[in-house]
Image 1: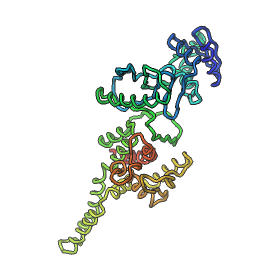
Image 2 (image 1 turned 60 degrees about the vertical axis):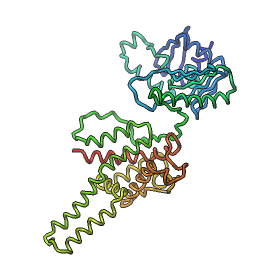
Image 3 (image 1 turned 180 degrees about the vertical axis):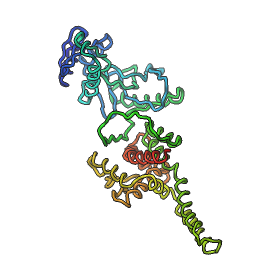
Image 4 (image 1 turned 60 degrees about the horizontal axis):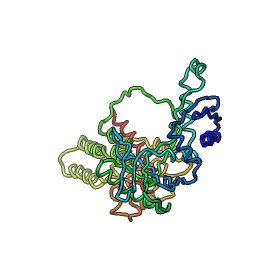
Length: 410
């Protein structure tokens, strides 16, 4: 029976199983639980374990069968209410529908080598740890929802009325799905994208061991505008938008720091005991003003902000920790060009702040102006490989933004 084959698939993860009709009992390292399989899931199990028509493309994140092709999608626009099903059709009887991932796709992911069982085991452990000894003695086996075993992404599926060959099915399905997603954005303000288009990969850098969350009330009041930029960055799905929002935290202080620097220089002249209205004194003051205006470019203002609010040695240590954790000098000796230029951060006092300002400012300019300066291949295009470069530098600009917010708090 297919249900027995399904149960035996758990053995590769260290589970022992016993099948009793539509119930499977599990034992994992002494944790005992059971799950019930409803009629719809039983039909899907029989279909998947008896047929050999399914094929998953893990790079492009879709499943194709003899009858349809199902692409994983992700949502771009936040909303409080999500309509879980949209169906499109044409005069030929072809259909495209956005819905929860099919049971067949979920089962095939489970059967693959790509399946992450750790997520399931952690969930099972949490359920077990939440039970008291009295309850365990009374009911040794606890119930675990069958659906909770699987990954359940949203998908868009193309199902033609007439059977066509797989290559054409995938090509046509991709084209029609993308057209339907655009129509959905126009007519319903629901913005979705195929997961396969997300070529820019995120960078997870474990800098420290996760500890219990500190929920003490902060003693500091933080500037609302800076916090607003920071929250937009943290909540953004797009590396480019997150990068720019972190950058805005620093940019917000450009004029403040620049004016303060000018004020202190001018004050040192005006407050001197020898200062009077003579030409040489006034000319000296004007010289400072002119020199300040001449050097008032955004890179120098960026450098001025991080020099004022951030300790260079702390910045050096932060960047060094990242490079150690990933086992690569990704910032101090980068292998790739950064949007048309070979830029690096010299991790040495007197150089790190200036180099960091130059690199971050260059990426910011590429995000805003790259189409004017570089070839199309070097532009920052949503969901492309260029997002990977931006993502690599997000930890640094995020670190700088947080330090500025902390320093500006009261």
